[in-house]
Length: 348
Image (cartoon, rainbow, N blue to C red; front, side, top):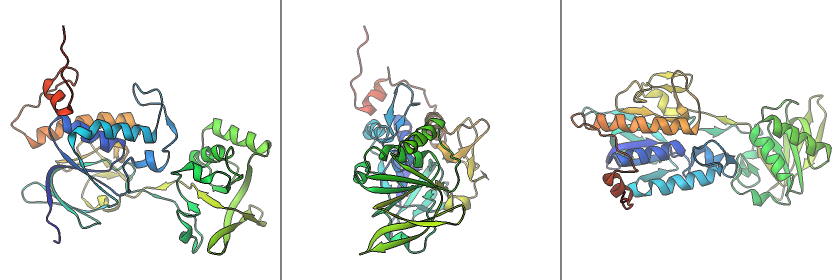
């Protein structure tokens, strides 16, 4: 082993909103955590897929973007000093004789942890890519599978591929700032919000964007730049479309990856848990958020927050089986106020 393992009470796999809130719930119970994520920054799907789109179903927050939610969660967990290990996947998880788990990452980092929390969303997901030989050299230059900075596409000739929410939402958005927008989908049937479909058709009717039914079948480059794509319709007729940027939203390909080899009870690429502890089939390993499944499961961020709270209490009992875990409230507990770095209020 090239690196000495980091010894800790908890490792969280996944730095999306639920993984971040898991840090908070563990912190309230005096359990410090290390967080591992395959993405280069925290926030999970919120940052990768819709950083600037509004979210309306976070309790007590009428509206926030994925970026705002992530930033607020980072502020909330700051007192607990979680350490983040980003841009690396968990490659191995091996139970040890002393009950701990040896976790190894793709960057050759190692952890010896007493508990593990899998908060990996849909897994170590990858965007479904466009199948054109050699086009990968333009990824993150002129070929994009997600939008991080919308302003970089202003006044550009944009071609967008896809028929889901992401494709239509960005096509609608860019119709106001791009030089031109062409939306390509393999059929005239869309898996998006009805309001977005109606708005897209309005923009097409007013020539503010163009819809083509078919697929991209080839591309051309000039001076090492992507210059045009070949579009082929359902009748086999082709034409060339000049462009500056190609945006592809074919959805995500969720991959459990090595998680599938850990001996957990898995159903259709989701990890089975109970609804008391959100523990997996292996004691000491918990799964929260979109990656888990149980009767009545709803894939909502707020559901994941609930799961993280119960998993934290279960882990505290697992780590300290002889200690009674008291339920305390952040409103009134001086101990929690101290942990959070806030002054305890004086009630008259």
